[in-house]
Figure 1 (cartoon, rainbow, N blue to C red):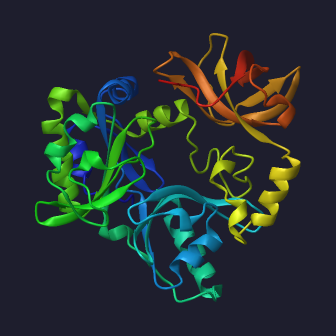
Figure 2 (cartoon, one colour; figure 1 turned 30 degrees about the horizontal axis):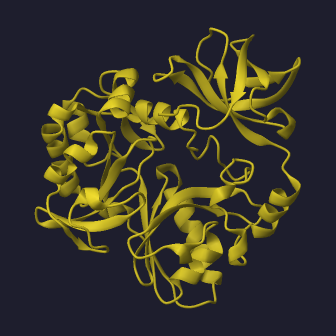
Length: 374
């Protein structure tokens, strides 16, 4: 039986096409992927992200514990701050990528991938059981929360009307739009408290709102109503994928997995090798110093072809050298784009490659990330 978010009825009412995504029945599109994608790039879109997981970590040992299992340096987070980070095994392979927020001294809030909730929580609990640096309490709070992402350049014009007034907890701001990138605060919405962060997965400015089911249902309706004059549209997983691929944001199970390290995936910036010991550090330090056997590249198709897709072979000079991990037709650029793993010698910008699509090879070129720039 597929799980459903509190917005399931709203998606049905809007005529969404629903698919199985990591065990959840989720909207892939409402009108069309291109239409929804361009709404987010040019105006505003709202996504249901209630399937994402939430984990709270608190206690006197919380900071030290998280710094031992996450790649980024959690000590750098002020109260109300957030950071992108990863959890790695001892071999450097990625358990998951996530966002970590500091809500107060010794209290942290993690947003994890929907398909990884059970695996992540089990892994974190196993790590906490071995941890000796202070008391840590870890709770899977996923069933307490629903969430939406409101993304696009015009969102800041109406979001304060949706959630009016100053913040009430975590971090003091006079209005939602006073939050800076990666900041989070608690706001009163109707009778409940909701977390609002200035984050997203689209490459556009925007906000992610996490709160109780009823609050998120009302916020969804209010965004669509108040945001209408600003061009807001409901957007599904299809547009979420094309948006993140254009700006080269990784997706777990594609760019990242337990056999791939953050260094190979090109997210080494979020690995703080200078903070002391943490899971996978020695392998990651070795890769940073000596290089890797594979590297994630972004590419654009140069030949006219069907869109590239995951697992399509990548060819260089008549030899198969790697495979595509994400591929799509870019609505912003109107051409095929993607990301894939190749040996480092072929990871240089302007390297000519070929993508095998349905048994035929088509020309493409390695480009600098992100593929799409404003």
